[in-house]
Image 1 (spheres, rainbow, N blue to C red):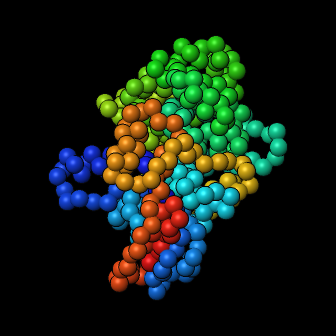
Image 2 (cartoon, rainbow, N blue to C red):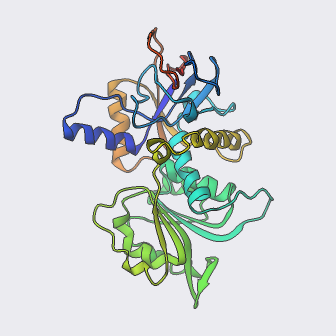
Image 3 (cartoon, one colour):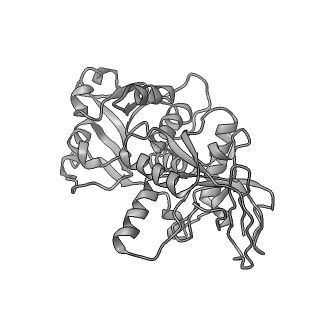
Length: 339
């Protein structure tokens, strides 16, 4: 019933255009209602309302129907519309994997209890940044969450979703944090350091500052490709770990892809319990024109949250059904299906 646009959609489009491949259907995130199922499907039934992040090895979600492996589906949040649910999957999976799996941070359920560590999110107002802010402050409950933003509206957006402090990513980061250094949980020899840094932007832009700000034995997670090679030597004496987050690793290497089902189910629970919310800020009815507009918005670098496209309903029939997967029919009032 709805899809959202991510940077990976833009990257895929650019790569296909440059390589002159045959046309493909773009799109990863989606939400809708299951309309038909394959013979080996056991986790869902016709009529179930679901959301998903899809997979790179299948046709994308920018269509009336999408085939989705059942292991990648989860029941959508009951408190959200299909439109708002479609903004969640990819950004939520990336944020959750960064915090819970890679940084090994545990959920904190006690009220007014926070973990004595700090996190810097570079590109705090984007889709992934928005989910990182919420999960970091309200789920794993870090004491200090810092985000980068440069405009009044994006600064307010980051604060609303959990940021304790804001730095301007259009300027060097380290000098801006000099006065804030004493407030950081980790202080070594009188110098405050940041325990975790997650970079949802070109890491080469701020790499020197990142190397200065990261704490000894700290962790850096990268989500975007660097425009120039990164020098890791400054991190050697600090014994800092650097890792990549890629949402589709489990899917592409067939390493328990049902992890997506479990993770998105937990995200849906957190949404329905009012702990976190969706990152949607814009929505349009899907057409070639609005799809181009959505891609341009994401490419601009000024996009806050996520842009969602609803898919108009129409009749569709397909006689071929994989044994395990999903055909997703979407629209403002249409349905997503799984084959």
